[in-house]
Amino acid sequence: MGCEIKPLDLNLLLTLANLLQTQSISRTAMRLGRSQPTVSRALNQLREILADPLLVRSGGKMILTQRGVELAGPLEEWMAITSTVLQPVSFTPSALDRRFVVAASDYGVLSVISPTLAAINEASPGCRIEVTAYSDDMFKKMAAGEIDLIIHGFKPDMSITYARHLFAETQSLIVRPDHPILSLCPAPVSLDDYLAWPHVAISIGADGYDHVQFCLGDRDVERRVAVRLPYFYAAPDLIGASDAILTMPTRAATKFAQLYGFICLPAPEEILNFDYWALVHERSIRDAATQWLIDMMSATKSGNMEEANSARSAA
Image (cartoon, helix red, strand yellow):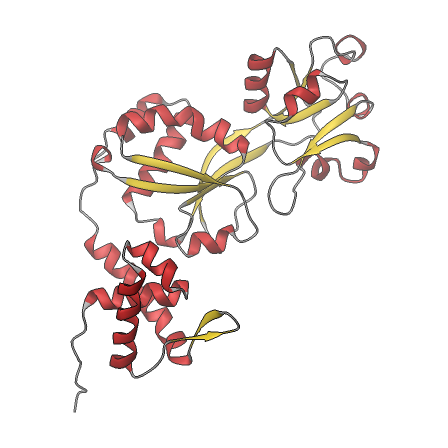
């Protein structure tokens, strides 16, 4: 004999799914655009229907009961399936009204978002981009829906993310116009000559990744780091006022040379090139708006404006 299935308001299910994800009445209310009292009343209804507290307070925070843990996975799958089922058959960029949270460094802003923004705004005035800094839990945040897209140059872990290659990047040096290296060292600059000067070093992300340090390996101990920074945009004043060398991706180096009158030189061959990627969670790979945004970034950065125009008018 089959069991009786009690009818349940889909809005209650949506509220429950978000409560189990956020474990917070206030964050759930913010996500759903509802008041906290409304979400609290919904939680009380759910507790009565399911005969379980679902969320209990422990040590100043809310945690899931065992029943809540058991429901979290199926409800997340239900949300993903429902999202796919209800997704419009066609997508029109001009009708998009959405905020995308993108994790990026200042180089990502300079090399991907800045040159893409005009085309995105033209195609979709309602598309808004909010940039957030890298963090050690950004992949968890992307899985939870708090971040839509990550753009960076680290090799993607394909077990936890889906990746779109944006471009391959070389490395360059920038120095002030009267820097002695320009007359003393032949081009291209050798690694020995490179290591003879002080450096402004850049450490990226929560774990402070230094691409030059990675490339130099054992020889990094020979590098004299005068200043270490977590971003590129503070570097111009330091370069212009000293003999220090800044090593940076060529797109950024070229931009800085144009803006500040610096000289841009190829980096020693030991400073390896790298690839730049757009990363999304599995939950977004079928989302037409997210894929359109990545298409715009990829097309614009490859210089293929015909492709970008095609993406702009996609329907």
